[in-house]
Image 1 (cartoon, rainbow, N blue to C red):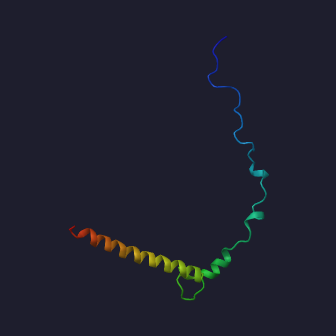
Image 2 (cartoon, one colour; image 1 turned 45 degrees about the vertical axis):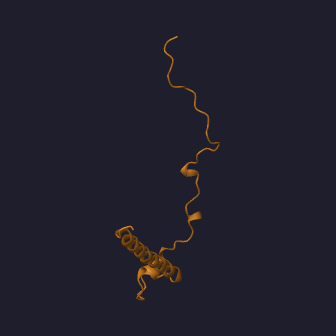
Image 3 (cartoon, rainbow, N blue to C red; image 1 turned 120 degrees about the vertical axis):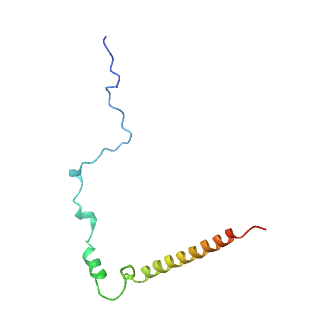
Length: 91
C-alpha cells in the first residue's frame, strides 16, 4: 500500500464561475482611455495670468480654497477656545 500523499491530488472546485482573462485577450487601451487631456491642462496651468496654480480652474477651485480656509480658521478658533476652557479651574 505504501504511503498516502498528504496533499490531495484533485484540483479544488472553482470558487468563482468565471475564468481569468489573459492580457492578450483584452482590447487595445486606446478604445477606453479617451482623449489625452494633458496638453490642454498644460496650456491652462502654464498660462501667465498672475493666478496661483491652485486657483487656475475657476469657481470650483475658489470654493474649495475658501472652504478649506474657513475650516482651518474655524478649527483653530475651536482649539484655542477648548484650550482656554481646559486651563480654567472648575468651580
